Image (tube, rainbow, N blue to C red; front, top):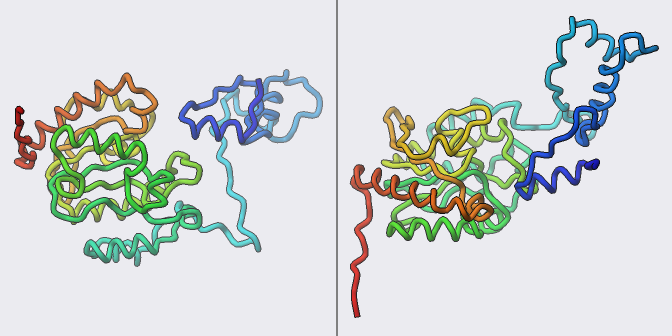
Length: 298
């Protein structure tokens, strides 16, 4: 079965990817790679090999490295302004010195990457400085983009229910942030350069909020704050207290699955309850656990 680029994007957006292709199958994102692979599989005596294939065959049988897709230049020949070009030092300095309201204004005006042209709202936070618990998610979805608040869609409703099971009230007892401040088009995964640029805002947010406990929900939140790279497993990070350095001090952090993953995999909800119990213990140790509601019997 062959896949088009649109097929692959839809499968990824539904959380069913990645799409695994046979070695000789053309990559729908890079069709010329499939042609090159077939040429490499032909005997060396094949007539008139292409220059690219011949050059690779001469490298003592070495496998070709990963192929990077280049981005087309913008109309008029000027290069596209993408986040991998880095954040201007002048803006980075403003972020490092900003207070909460100024930082929010800087984020709302940010146009460093392509997400700025497709967003409805910058999703800065749900809550202001004060609470000792800070929850960090991944990226805004469609509902979050429309309302300008994190975790307000179906995954947000589930997160609210999870917090309420510990008597935690949003905004009052917890501030909620995302790694990315804008919605990635079609809910695709965040790109490393986007995480890097948005990371300047997130780092300053955490410094101002000065949390006493962190809850990290989802792969990109876990990877960003625990400095994990590669294809790590969230399951292996669960069940223990991590330490995250914020403003020169260590903050206990609990890892859990993203609520959107729990909606797709309801059997994993039992594991998230274990994570909530660990969060409850960490908050009790930090002296910020809300009191339990009084039970009344009629």
